[in-house]
Image (cartoon, rainbow, N blue to C red; front, side, top):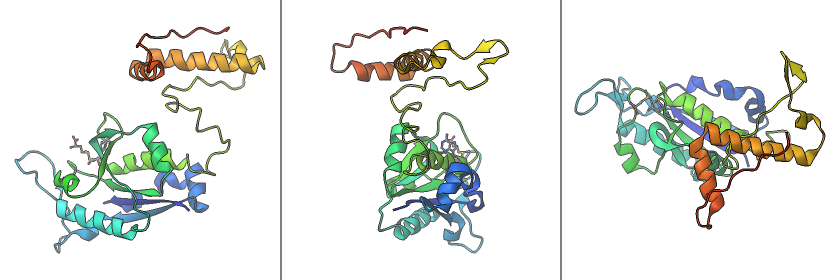
Length: 250
Ligand code: SAM
């Protein structure tokens, strides 16, 4: 069964966009995933097809109207009634997206994604409908469409048959709560910099130990937040004492 993506947007022409190329594009052609867009404006009730209004309480910008959003969401849910797809809304106020959540979504039947514009959504849509608010990080994009494309891209590459080597998804950054180790390829020497000797040794045990050490030390120095979380998870249910990583042969 194919992974079904339905996007609710004011800019359906933005899709598939980059998802029509490369791995995701091939997978779309092969029917590994399917794409459906819903124009939110089609659910406006007035003759001007109004989708937004000024913020209650004053302030800059415009807010997406709850009645229009609800009608669009209800339409998309009804259209996918058989699969009971989760409904996600892209918003910087949402829970930061994680690789674990991406993996869960990719393992399911698909997603309905609501893309915001302007100042965002009338908050009552989240009380009135079952919608998961998802953030792509502590940045503000101009619209939910690029965020939806990123989320979908992360899911699609995990679908069976999309990536070449079966292991290529499981060793990557965040899969073990760590950043991935660094990569190198030919030429062996570039501007006086050489590929680490261990990677040219052919000794698979040493290579694996070096990669593990690099993943740990890079996570510790670049992402102390991830490192702390990883250590806490690893130490449980022990007393909480931290383990030091042992440096392998270079
Ligand atoms: N006024 C909002 C705020 O400060 O939280 C920002 C609205 S933003 C200009 C317009 C739309 O872009 C949002 O409704 C959302 O759909 C999308 N968006 C912006 N940043 C995002 C992020 N970090 N993650 C997910 N969606 C985002």
